[in-house]
Structure formats: C-alpha cells, structure tokens
Amino acid sequence: MSAPVKHVGGNGNGGSPTLLTKADFQSDQETRWCPGCGDYAVLSAVQQFMPELGIPPERIVFVTGIGCAGRFSYYMDTYGMHGIHGRAPALATGLASTREDLSVWVVTGDGDALSIGGNHLIHALRRNVPVKILLFNNQIYGLTKGQASPTSGLGKITKSTPFGVADHPFNPVALALGAEATFVARTIDRDRRHLTEVLRAAAKHEGASLVEIYQNCPVFNDGAFATLTEKDVKDANQIRLEAGQPIRFGAARERGVARGSHGGLEIVEVADVGEEALIVHDPSRDDSGLAFSLSRLADDPTGPTPIGIFRDVARPVFGRPSRVRHEPADDSELAELLASGDTWTVA
Image 1 (cartoon, rainbow, N blue to C red):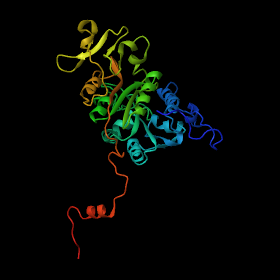
Image 2 (image 1 turned 90 degrees about the horizontal axis):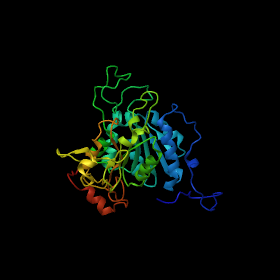
Image 3 (image 1 turned 60 degrees about the horizontal axis):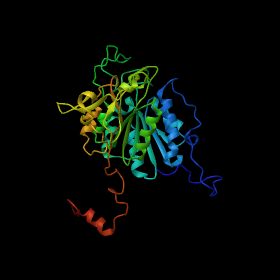
Image 4 (image 1 turned 120 degrees about the vertical axis):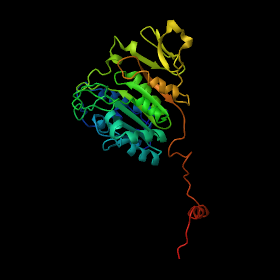
C-alpha cells in the first residue's frame, strides 16, 4: 500500500503532503447506536485503518443498506450512499465497475445482506466485483427490534419466532465460498488487532472481499459470541487461521484440526495425533474445498470456531482491463459487428 498522505498538503498550493489521520475520516455527524453496540468498535477500527490506504477521503465510497449498519456511511467523512434494503452490493457494483479510481466499500448486516439482499451479494462475489464487503453479523434484526434473521440459531426465541427459529441458519463464510468469492474472512468486533489485520488484507485484495464480523447486539442478542470473546474461554474456542501454519488452538495450543477418517476435517488432540497430522492452512489454494470444510467446523459460534482469512486467491476482476477494452471500435469493426449474426434487409 502507498504511504498515508493527502494529494495536496498545507495551504493547498503545492506544499508538502500532509499525513492522513483518523480525524480525516470522521464525519461531523453524532454517532448514534445503542450503548455497548459492537458497531462502535468496528467504526473506530475502520477510521483508524483508513489512512494506511494512502487514498484521500474523496476517492473512497461507503455504500450501506438498511439496518443498524446502514448508519455507517453517515459517520465516515468520505463519499457515501445509504441505499434501500439489501441493494448495497448492486449499487456498489455499478460504481466499482465504472470508476476504477475509487475504493468502494459495502457495510451491511446479516439481515440486509442475506435476506432481501442475498442475490445481490452472491453475484457481486461470483463476478469478483472490486468491492470490500463488511458483513456485520449479530444474528438478529436489531433496527426493527429483535426479529429472527437468516443467521439466527435454530430454536432461538425472538419477537418473530416465539416458538423458536425453525429455519436452518446461513453460514456467511460458507455461502461466500460457495459463490466462489476470491477473498473470504471472519473476525470479531472486540478484537481490534485481528479486525485491523483482516481489514488490511481485504483492502489489499484485488477483487471482491467478504469479511464477516461477529458483532454483539447488547439489546436483542447480548453475548451471542461470548464463547469467542470472554477472556476465560476465548483461547479455548478461537481457531485462528494463519497462512503456512498448522491449525492449532487452545490455551496451550493443545488442540488442532486434522483430516478425519470420513474425509472431512475434525478437531483433534495434538498429543494423540502428532503435529504432522494437522492441516497446514493455505488460503491461496485455488480449490476452495478445504476452506469450505474449515467454514463448516462450527455450526454456530458456541464452540471452537475458525476466525481469520479462509481464502485469498487471484482471479480476473470484473470490469477491469483484462476483460474490458477501453479503446473504441474502428469503423470496420463496427460494421462487422452490425452485420454479424442474423441480419435482414428491409425494403
């Protein structure tokens, strides 16, 4: 990435470039989420991280949908759009495919992205549109006051499911991998360092990036990710994925992930199988099968759950020069196109 500098510094008359800071990305709007909401932590991390890109705020766009996450665009001092429910990936696709000079980000929630917006999300990912999608997953509809979302767990009692959720929940990481997304990751709102590392990798990636962020809703789904965030249990349950390293976890790194006798992945005791039996993580594998198996290790984040970068591969980017010709066709090419296929002469 380039150095975090503005294009013009000082008095705007060609002086020395000035460093970008967090303040350059903070709007003058009052930040208003519920006290204790995980969105505050994510917003602060994003604003702190943005100067690293070396891109001035006027060349960055945040597009949001409907939901608590939708307010994000108001709090970033960049260009932005607050779109209608579920359509943020579609709006961002149009912008990113026509303005290569812009850095385009989508901020969405599990309800916004995976319910009415599901189709837009998967097609932005499969096309490899150059947008960075931050999916805040709190497993509930927060803005509309506590209804079940597409990621709410089976049996969850909510205002819309008084007898418990009967629908099998989406796994956003598995969904993205199934759509052949080229960058897929998962992180947690309360882990600032890990969150920033994942954001940094997502921003560097050429093409579509999907980052699922486990985000606590203290009002309607408090403690949904406590297994991964509380000091006394998080080491036993966070399976941190590190490129080139055997997948180990636990307070003493006593557990790991290995290939099971059934062909899939399973959690094992390292003392029982030996470190050589553990899977070595490689997010650059072109085949997404292993990454998908990792995403299915946990049906929900109440036990050992992988976090980190599942997949990071290169593929032609939608709308970029490798596929789109920018020079206009000459007269002979145009005539050949118009006369190709089935043609008729009308008297």
